[in-house]
Length: 67
Image (cartoon, rainbow, N blue to C red; front, side, top):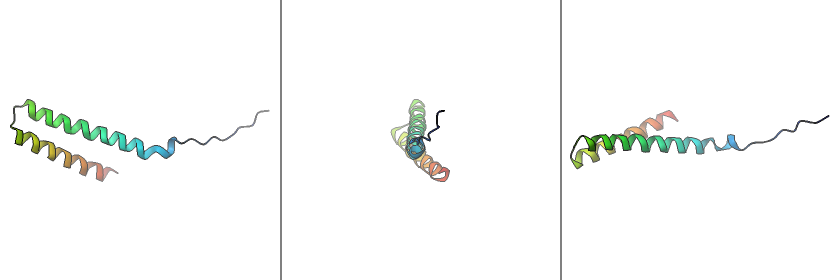
């Protein structure tokens, strides 16, 4: 008769890493999409920079309230 042995997995300990990687990926993609959209609309450099900073701040505030 075989005995069942409990195995410990480390996957549950790395949830913070998964959240950090997915959050960073989300922030990079959303900010880059916003900046590329503004640049494609032939906006000036100041408008593109301002849109990027505004998107970055909005994303940071969204992530802060989500966690």
